[in-house]
Length: 283
Image 1 (tube, rainbow, N blue to C red):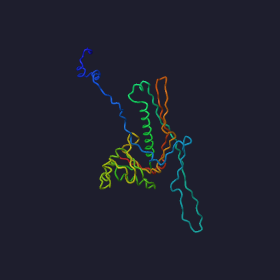
Image 2 (cartoon, helix red, strand yellow):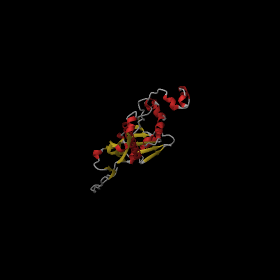
Image 3 (cartoon, rainbow, N blue to C red):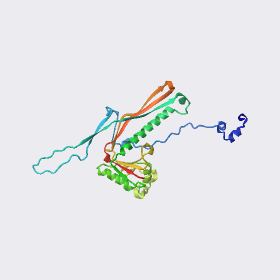
Image 4 (cartoon, rainbow, N blue to C red):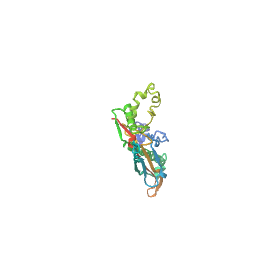
């Protein structure tokens, strides 16, 4: 009986497949891509080591032990005591991360956009987010933690700064999760221009510099806990060693009638001085 149905019967029933075939449709030919996550820039690391600076599979980084060389008061004609600074060494060995993409010839022939190119771009984003997660993991090793309440306050921020300054470091960077970012927005000192001396919060929705520290909002799905924040000295806290930058190798799988791409990176983030890092927690 379906062969004898009128057009308006198809359009008025729940049989959407047949009805939709009778209605002209325009397919939007632009792919709506995912948003770019908010990540920490590499400029907030103490230094970056590239492939040419890592001749083998790893590299040793030597550190001066703070305050290990001392001078002493001497009496006239007394022997001058000998002393020398102490040093420590830490080994940084990059780890390999990656993903392989496999797309059949039929998918490439029939798709509305370049599947391989788009997925390669997404793989690059995932590696960037992975690097951000590695940074957060090292920041979690900070020597001091400030326990806030339901919301992060100015006192929590300045206490974290004091922890860093107590070890003679300079708090230069402030990274916040999204819930902490909301807490900062609700601190009236930063929201009212007559107190803060700026209308940046009202015009941009967030303050880029707080007490001399550059402020970064970090996406929760890039390694950041939404209720956490970190304060650190970006000249001392951690380093990034990259033996292999994000690399792409194309390959073919004739037996499966498919093309593929392998995207890899060899990288390691290493905390150098944990006392140059302070963590803020809220509930």
